[in-house]
Image 1: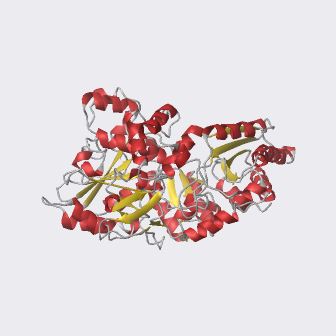
Image 2: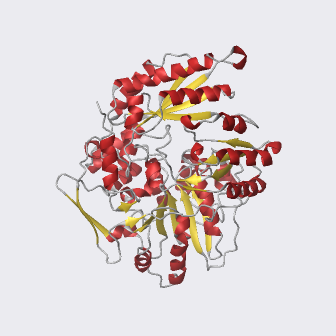
Image 3: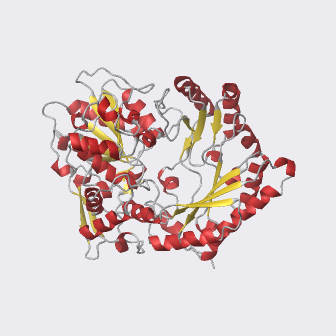
Length: 586
């Protein structure tokens, strides 16, 4: 444990001490498989991630496994750790990571990749899997970014592709059968490689063409399958969900009960990776959700229930669920929030019900400013749908709306961008069309744009990404067409988006880029105050890799893509058809 003298020198010392409400405590007896769940970002971000809460409980329900947590130390703590040569430790038992059997990284965002290397280095563990012995921890990784595992292939012993609840018990069973003084990591990896969803990068070779594209990707070990099939939970009512979750002792991004109402998506937005990799659509019953909410409220004391999914309004029993939760918890001032809404599905009765305790902000995602662009991306909502949804929200008492758009999408023209400002102005006018007695104060419309990043396993995976200057030009065009004083504009950093695009669609050679950037000082690249474009430029120069190859070129349909060996149950032929369907008809 870091002593008081150290903790008094860092910002938010509670990040490093543990002892939260509902923290798991187990007596160490030497028989458990010790698993360090590593979140490669700061404590406040990691503790807000529902996947951490699920897997922490899932793994710790086993007597023969002890799952502990570790987060990326903030820069002030890292400086002290390096100065005093202190190892990175877990929060539960303050055990150095090098003493664990497994270290499992969750891959939620590509811009945390340099933090993964930094955490391994702070733990005194060799970065490259080839340089680690049987005595080192087994390094594994999973999460949405694992659907293209290749950028981290040099550093990770095995990847888990899919939903861990369905398969990880088998991994632990095999490990516990094989562990001991004569444990052989190679033999263990060969055993688990036969399981669906397990990818061992060292069991595969990549051969490249002279132009840099992939010529062949093939197993070099007879147990390694040619395709890695994701694993999924089939019955959401029967799958494990924690009855109590960790309650942080400091403010984090989300202090709330997270109620996962379904997985997957019934939509087919062509830019959206989550909509493809989380298929099929699977729901929980109202009774299951109510029982889970009741347990979690009692165990945590939270006063907010957030209904989590890719598009909450697509839950077929939403009104029934909201009624049941309100009837049980509203008298205790427990709020219900809907963090993800489709504007066309906004229902006035539901809007009225979720504000029964207090109003939370409403966020809508038209994604495209023009109908032309919404058709290209298969958003399946009309301008009238958007206006009707905004009117319902205003009539329900909201006067603050957030609207999300994407710029730089395939086939985009200037008119698609200028339409964003007009749409915001029209929504402001809808507010002022209400009777005066229904307008408590002037409206506030916040327009946010993110930069398009082509993602693996989507119909747009073959498209080029714009460079940073192009994105900034598009941002200026949007801003210049924001005419209403009641509409503000926020936008995502263009340079960060370009690097994210590189890491998202990278092959194995991108591992050297990540390592170079880390050695040059890259840390917390998802944080604007720490992202350094010059560092990444230097890393490209040092490695000889180029943005022209990884970001700015069209890929042909017959090119072997780095992630083609990952089967997410969406065929390449289907993605090609959807890519062609996105082409403008005029």
